[in-house]
Length: 118
Image 1 (cartoon, rainbow, N blue to C red):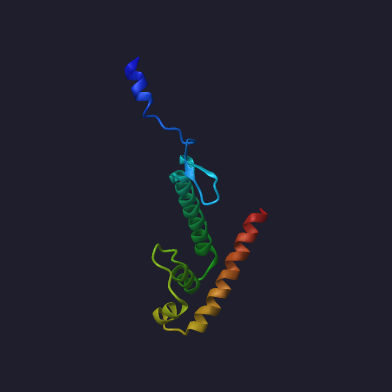
Image 2 (cartoon, rainbow, N blue to C red):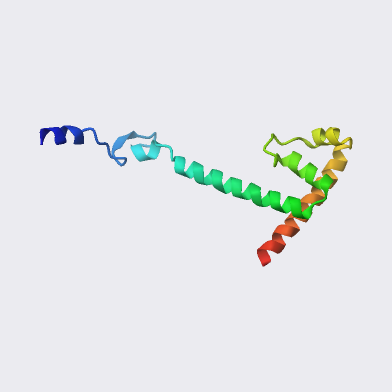
């Protein structure tokens, strides 16, 4: 019995008060512990969204539009590029990249809108 009591004394409740905030409200352990589960769920949702966008990019855009959207938004897993950098890579002006990007985004929006209507 004594051993069980000793073990229980180390148990801590997540709702146990550990202090107060600036306004005098009680703070419990659960308020300050990070929730990795939510981070994981957010990462899964983000990956699913990226996968969906990649699918529509592949289906809806021509090769140049695909390149620009992938590079601009980092859909290849790399850091997103500026319009200027994309233009340099393709040998076209930043303003032309902007026009192609705008047209490609309009196509993607239309494709997504059509898929949600079904």
